[in-house]
Length: 236
Image 1 (cartoon, rainbow, N blue to C red):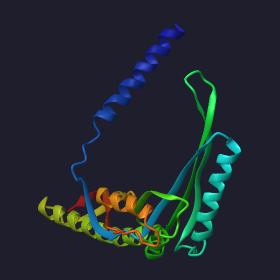
Image 2: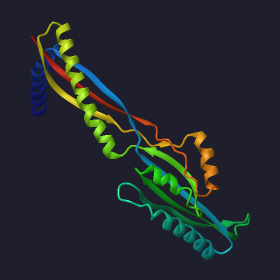
Image 3: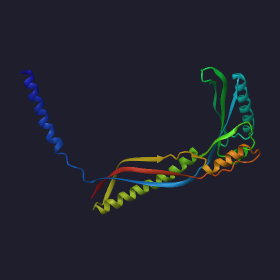
Image 4: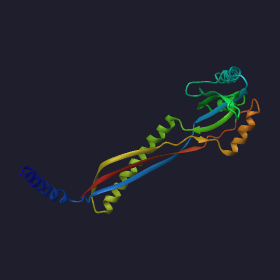
């Protein structure tokens, strides 16, 4: 009897809940829309990765050669280092054995890297011709945080204005006199770093063997986009 009473009580609750949910009216005055703004901004941060590979039969000698090459490059790079203008960072420094087909160690090989990055692209380009102990491995241009945030602030204002203009126009076309902004999301696309162009790779290879010559670089432009997605409640 307890189980029967519980089942009857549950069915009673279900009968009272279902009609209420089924009777909820469909909102016909809620409009979803989006607006965006885009701008082309000059990339202002140049990154050059220098590297070298050393081989030998003795691990200590290979490691010493890597340190010497890295120290020489660092000494030259520190001459132009400036906070927020030219930043230095040591990259990968690895040493590993080489094996014969039978599994015996027959030598050692190591790699060292130096990253130079900053807004003073002219100084960094000149530096590439003065570092002889390391060769140029990668070159890329990116957008600084300050430049990106400045662009996003300006574009957010434009995208929001376009969102409101769209809302007002659609409200009028649907026969409503005004609207109220509901839930809104603002998203910004962060542009990725731009690697060196294929035609520039030849120049990079030539620069590795040409001392005292600046690396030819061109920053290019990055596309920054801000999108506003949301809903508005139309009213008469």
